[in-house]
Image (cartoon, rainbow, N blue to C red; front, side, top):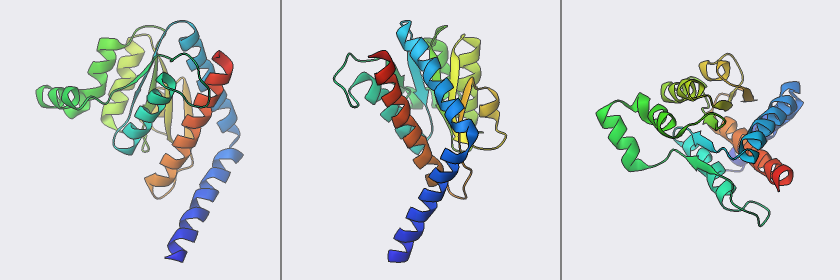
Length: 190
């Protein structure tokens, strides 16, 4: 038991160290915050999406912006695509690949931002959402893993976690990046 715990903590520490040491990290996170700040400051919104644990992260991001992170402040306009009735309706009537893209087409407007989260960077439904966001005139911020991916290629800002053998390490970097972006947005906007 102790070996599992120690090994897991050391793997997480290495992933975070590699993320911090990557010179692209500061630049991409700064760019992501600037894109979001411009949108929120200009009256636009952020729409977030992901699958599985990444959907939980997308939801967490939206609820922290509309609720409260570290400061009492006005709510910021953000929504996660996580309505089960909607998702099963579109999945049944069209396909699972379309569940995020159709939402983006319905609610996305020029000046809005899509926060697209995928540990692989190649999830078909997330890629289609990013393509729909581009057609709507939205900016695209991506959380994914390092390496060439379909999703990163569509991004205005791609935050790249070190690629690891298991997606939980990538998700841990993603939630750290999410918390930092929210903290920075609170400081910059409020």
